[in-house]
Image (tube, rainbow, N blue to C red):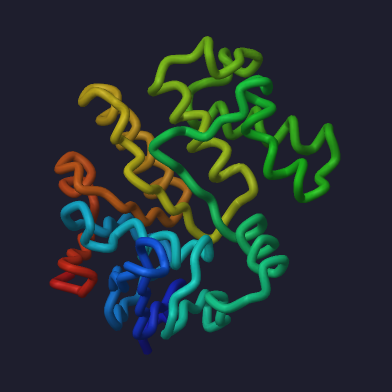
Length: 231
């Protein structure tokens, strides 16, 4: 018997309205996209700019809602939750990595990492211990008390990776995580995420057109003009 998928997207369609009311135009970003992800995958959604890959990742991450269709996590529909419930689901079940790092500049590295646990109400001692443990996983335990402006781009992205996994999410969604990194730093980051996937069974889903990311992914889903081209 086949294992139930961790994530299921079912006939996901997304349209946007652009321009002022007088000259408004509808743009279709995704058209009836259906696909599944299993727990433990290391997968990438690929396609040229405008193909819909970031839109699909945002919908999978409940940061955006489809016009029609739905997204399920372990059979639970999450794509049309009320905003407070969607925010709670993201906080407890999902990790995010963005190309711009999105670290809080006034916080130290370890404070950035433990921030999701602050929002969850975890005690100060527990969250600091957990954050330091995860910083050790990403090789930054000696940088714990540095603020982001004293870290390199690659180090900041490692802090972002640690923050994305500190609360033990179901899946980490990474939108163009190597876009602002040189090739050597990007390779080091991908090594890190591969090891977290293989050694700790953390599920990763990327949105990327970086050949370095696509060559590492064990499955690549191609989008073209908002439609599933191949997987």
